[in-house]
Image (tube, rainbow, N blue to C red; front, side, top):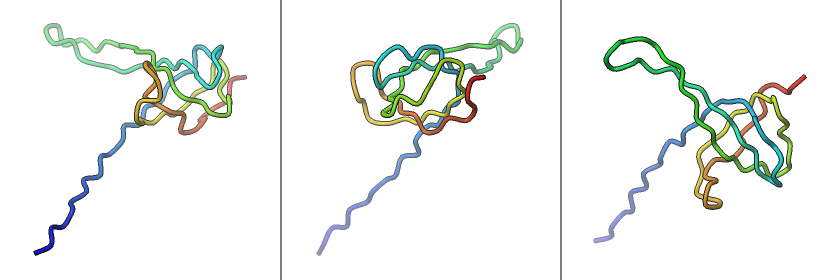
Amino acid sequence: MEKTKKTVQKRKKVLQGLVVSDKMQKTAVVSVERTVQHPLYKKTVRKSKKYKIHDEENVCQIGDQVRLIECKPISKDKSWRLLEVVRKAV
């Protein structure tokens, strides 16, 4: 009897945010905002988190709207990479 390998394909997370820093080589810092409901008061609150993303060609500039995708860890802080630039900064 031959065993068949089952491969489970994991769906990678895709986020959209605003570039707040591009001073590092091949790295950009992106701020991603999300809305959550407060557990007690039920008010909608905006929360933001910063992600360091891998930008191979140094395409990102401060103020760009970008889409990022989850990937395997590239360094200590980077486990996201640039998927596309949605809107360039003016």
